[in-house]
Amino acid sequence: MKQNKIQTTLWDYFLMTVGSLIFCMAWTSFVIPNGLASGGLTGLCTIIQYATGGAVPIGWTYPIVNIGLLLLGFLTLGKGFGIKTIYVIALTSVLFEVLPMFPGLHVMMEEKLLVALVGAAMESVGLGLVLLRGGSSGGTDIIAMMINKYWPVSPGRVYLITDLVIISCLLFVPGKGLVDMIYAYVMMLGFSFGVDFVLLGNKSSVQILVFSSKYEEIANHIIYEVHRGVTALQSVGWYSQKDSKVLLIVARKHQMNEVVNEIKAIDKQAFISVSTAMSVFGEGFEEVKTGFKIKKNNKTEEIQ
Image 1 (cartoon, rainbow, N blue to C red):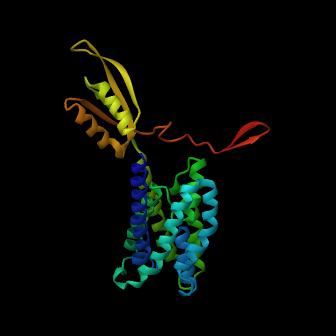
Image 2: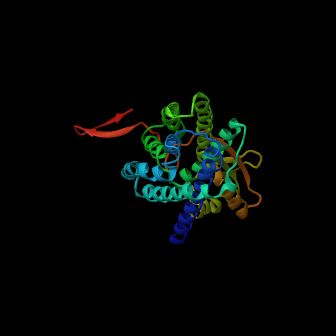
Image 3: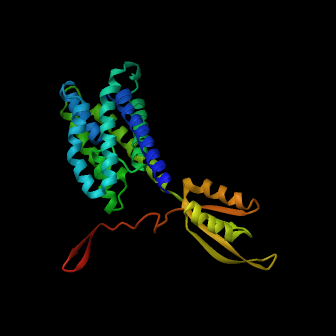
């Protein structure tokens, strides 16, 4: 059990490292060299860099602004979130300083729309990997996760609202205008949809029905080895008129292959039906989020 926890932790930090690298390269290789900007704290720091003519680079403002939000996220989202986010913020701050030193990584494009789309795709994939492992690059990510903890508002929706305000600041930067703001909005929209696709795609679930004469052995193996819940449903084979049990298993989509392979290892003749579950609420899956719960006069009230 302890070894599995260590392996999971190492895997978390590996994916967060890869995600941070992809996230930073989206900005240092595509967005900033082509003079574009977008939303989020990274976009705000980029706008400050443009406004000061590079005197205040993103590598300085990014970690400084994050400190206050990091403390707030630490208190709201827990110690694990704080530690992972500190790691990601420290790593991305270093990468924002180091990556610009390699001109070979700068990709110059005449088509600004393509720059915005590529930047949005890379940024959403990179940040999506970080968020999936319980971390954050700071800034509006922390705000999004705090809101998502108490209200059923997707991170992409939170980014959309905050980014509208940040991108509007481009109008006050010398040399920037309405066209730059439009490209920034394109990148913002691409990122918003992209990060939701990465995050919600991982949360999609499947419902697995298993028909096997070895249902008892399979059920025990799935519960104690794969650590997924199993429900046994009474059934009758209409052709054979024999009583049996059908196993019902609900799992994350990314766990489907593991579950199916474990079943086939026990009974190669097992009949397995897999269908997509639109939403699954309950222990081990999603919670129904209704807002903050506060106690007042010995009564619990919900803030919608």
